[in-house]
Picture 1: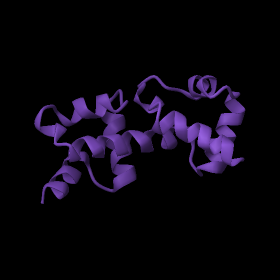
Picture 2 (picture 1 turned 90 degrees about the vertical axis):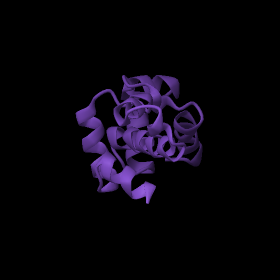
Picture 3 (picture 1 turned 180 degrees about the horizontal axis):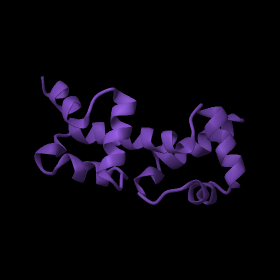
Length: 114
């Protein structure tokens, strides 16, 4: 996997914020990157050592954490923030968040407030 390919995919996620689309799938992201699904899958698997879902959800969790730092939880629910970050179900959000941070969203929020 080349540096250019990694940079292309990283740009789609960090600058274009493709992960905000709750319906995002491998085919959609591949199309945005002008790659085949196979090529994109290889870049994510080999270059980032993650599968597609973990790769995308990692960005979503980081976006969620950023919104908490900006005190967004004072204006909206944790689920509302999660939806703004691209999650489309409470169950998926809670499972992914706990997997990536070892905390539930509520536990994480409490730990950040102290």
